[in-house]
Length: 214
Image (cartoon, rainbow, N blue to C red; front, side):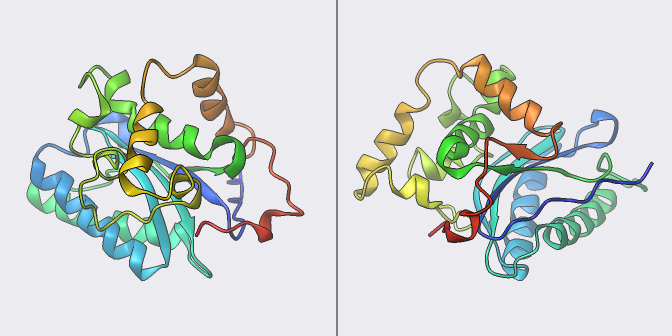
């Protein structure tokens, strides 16, 4: 069966998911997490892709990204994958694949779902029972978006910046998004988006090139 082509639209953001092969761990130590983030930053800069949100779970990763200009997500992920698999195999004296096939991606309807995807990504450790609050998990972008710590990897999305012009007020408004549980309907929509041609929400293709992430 032929692989479906990926949908890439200039100016749009994408929710990316990549899982370990057979759901096996991709990270064992703090060094693994830190090394992956270093490689991600290098590859994102190399291929002009802005990283807005991410979480590194034990056996999979989530990202919210936007290609800049001629940025190429596939090439970024290929570069990142090669570097990290080479590191991981050498570190743990193993061979072969690490990832479960190609990464999955959703085109995100910016106006309707952008901040919902931010929240979905950064709440992964809470849903998994690893922490009680997103702020307690060190390997996610909440450390920047909600806690205000410096994370050079992150480029804030325009929808995030529009929460408030003041940095502290913006982070306070962002943290309010994490009060209570995420609605089941929102989680279902995000998960179903990967099954329906890679779209999350109703995207107006006539206006897509007018949108900007800055």
